[in-house]
Image 1 (cartoon, rainbow, N blue to C red):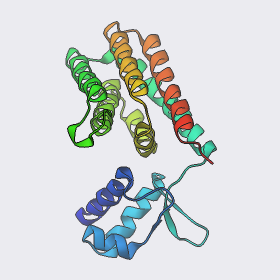
Image 2: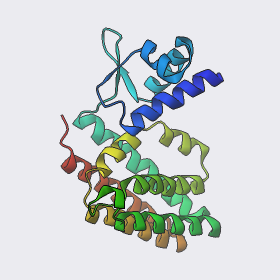
Image 3: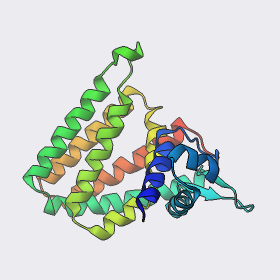
Image 4: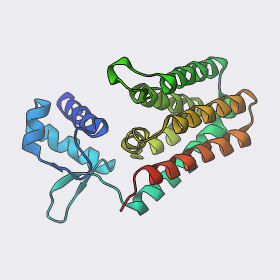
Length: 221
C-alpha cells in the first residue's frame, strides 16, 4: 500500500475512532481527499480496506457510510471477541514473561488512576475516560502480544470493537470503569499463576460484562 493510501487510511480511521465521523454518517471520496490532503485514488483504496474491516458499509446505491450496528451485529461482535480474547488470555498465561506481567500491572495502575481522576478542565468529578481508553487498549494489546499467535492477532484486528468501546466507556459510571480495572487485576493474578483456564474464564466474563454494559448504556436497533 502506498504512503498516500496509508495516510488516507489512518486519517479516515482516526475520524471514525474519534467519533468525528459518527455512525451512519455518509462519506464521499472528494471530501475525504480534501481532509487527508491526497488525491481520490488513495482515498478509494483506503475506503476499500476500511470496508473490508467493517468500519464502513456500502448501500445498495453504492454510497458509503460509517458503520452503525444493530443488535445482532453487536451481539456477534462481542461473542467473537470473547472467544478470541479468551483464547489469547489462555495462551498468554503459559507464555507471558515477567516483563510483560510488569507492563500489565503498570498499565492497569494508570487505568485505575484515570478512573479515580477528576480532570480540572472538566469542572466535574468525572473519570478521565480518554486515558482509560488508551490504557485499556494497551492492556489488551499486551495480552494479545503475549499470546504469541500472529494468526490470532490478525483475526482480532479484523473485529471492529474500538468504536464500540469508546461509545460504551463514555457512558460508563465510575463504578463500571472501576470494575473493568478490577477484572484486569484478576487477569494479572491468573497470568502470574500461569493458570490458562482461570485466565480464559476471567477474560470471557470481562468481555461478556462489557457487552451487557454496552447494551444497557446504549440501546441498539
